Image 1 (cartoon, helix red, strand yellow):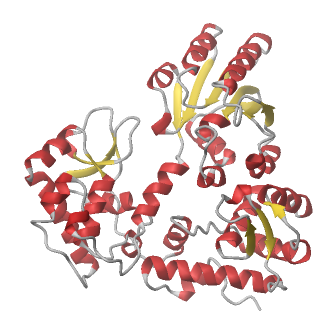
Image 2 (image 1 turned 135 degrees about the vertical axis):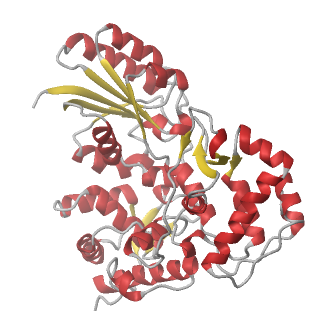
Image 3 (image 1 turned 180 degrees about the horizontal axis):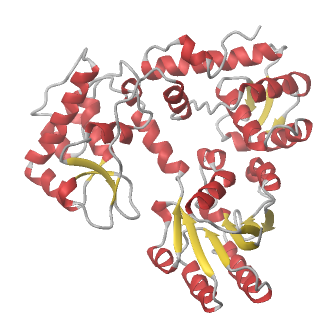
Length: 437
């Protein structure tokens, strides 16, 4: 195999600066990004991989195991994080890329994992050297000029955007409907005067009511104009459903995301869910979509009680359970019972367990530890800060591995009850056993 590709990861851009959220750092997977790039482009072997960040920041410790497993060279950039030196990673990446283009003639493809507009100039310079440039970034943070000058572009999921959408889509069952005065969008303030609430409904009635709400938007003069010009943000549609269908939750309809539910509701009719460039998803009219908008595909009805749907529901909203294979869960629980009584950071735990359990990937170990945390397995200190800034220690009463896993199973069951009101134990048992004794 010829090794003709260089990959550069701008961690500062991927985390959207220094004040990144807990979900951003926990859900960021460089392995998933690499797989997305390889799936989209038939790149030759990777000769160079470099990731630029202030790796001395303790919050990034959770990523170190993945960096090592993927063979990525971590490049220390002190300007990133606390010192607030703007574009430090961008400058270093540009210098290194040009150096490689000049000194390593066999490398003919450069992949820039960033949406920063400053890399447009780098892409043009690499073109002068006869190199191919592929960009890779989140839709919401990509500079249009950089995208335009790239020879190809790979979109990756934004953990922060998906988190907001998912948490909004999972409304607590039996939630009190908002008072009409609490409906904030002017379009919905008009809508609630015309639409009656729906209670004790079947799934078919919920779908019918949702379609009536969409039809009202088209009948309302201002809303129809919005649908035709720039769409209506899904948060607005969701506000209408929360009022009109008390207790509605996408999970009960078989969808982990509100957007997916709307993609099903819009299937085969004049409405669609679309994504304008650099924007979140919106409700729009199919025949009035701009040519540069992406229409999200229609979706089929989903069965609620499936392993796939349970996993999606557990992975969305809070608490989050992204459960790895059960063998990983058991191995990590066994290690914690023996060695997890002293205080340790999440990153420190990941590194220690990776060394002790080399047969399991750092990503799967991280997912196990985060699921344990969601299940209340750890004492986390200090309170009120993100887990990446806390010390963790196993609760004293969890003296056996099966007790650790049963604690997680209880949390998983409570999450499903919260989201869908009920669950099938035989389906859940395929994801995580509830009896480990």
